[in-house]
Length: 191
Image (cartoon, rainbow, N blue to C red; front, side):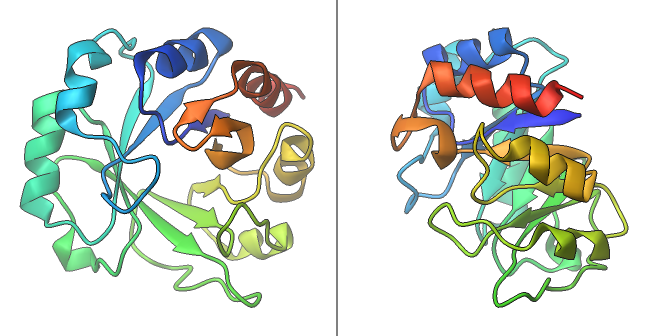
């Protein structure tokens, strides 16, 4: 089970996530996000993350060339695309996760060609009907409204490749509550 802690903005949160058993860390390169990260703020410590932990860059309508350059510069493994990107505008030489929001009970383009589909709630930490995730016929990363309290139920309902959390374990946007983060990872990895 892949467990991604997203919206990492600082070394302390990153290392606490790794120590707790996270298998992926997400860095949001979208300036309008309260969890916005930049290469200069990550570069001094990003190489400390163990190689087996995926480094996921989250992008919204960014040019493929920009994503490729940033990935090369700081060592990203995955480009998680959350905008109106089309398959012909994917960055090369990276694993692609396509983020999609479930709104009004509709899963958009469940057959979108990507290495994995990340299904997110409608926004603001809201969940969606997890049974809808069964429409996805490729690796699924489940996000949106997950918490330490509900992640096990979400996993049991959807059998995803992975789970993703950001706001559900924060003390403030961009800062993780390490106790809740450990609880989330433990619950996600329990069987």
